Length: 257
Image 1 (cartoon, rainbow, N blue to C red):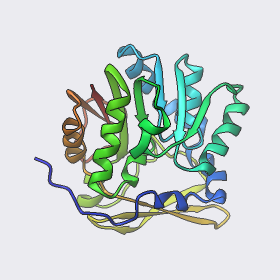
Image 2: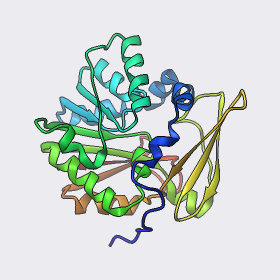
Image 3: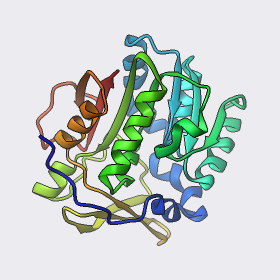
């Protein structure tokens, strides 16, 4: 049974304002594309290929890491994001990697069918802890319903998030081995409670940025996916299919239509 529903802490879409031009310009410094690619070791490529995926919609494409790398791996990829700043950077990165034919669209997750009225996809990915920017349960439900509607039969959705069960119950830690691998950025919490987690991103030159997240628990998201009509949900911790509940930094859920 679903338990988590804390109501709206932030207006829908207000997180976009936190992704300032200055922060977005330095986002790839946080990720470190080369080290991130090594850490994933083809994980998402394998999941998609095992499911027979060809067309992918990356709905939180950010600066384009997964959109570009999936395209380079042979998938037909469309990138979307609610932040115009992120899309500008994604276009720059696509050009840098000679992938200028990638389609990049500004779109809200709760209105995907309006942005893609004539499209169907084999997979939709929402990565980089992005889904936890949604604070209201109705927005989460609507976003998942929109994803479900845009998938072909037997299509999959992949959502990842920080391990908020661990953060809420045991405190914030990071092994710094799987996701945000840049060596010039320190990430630490300024606020942790059941309502919101605010993370502080401090760069080596002293610049500071903040992002606010809803601490969505693993079981709650699994139930939301099932309520949205997905038939099965598999979970992974830091790219491993067997994991201790509190151990991974990130949880990945793969749901099949």
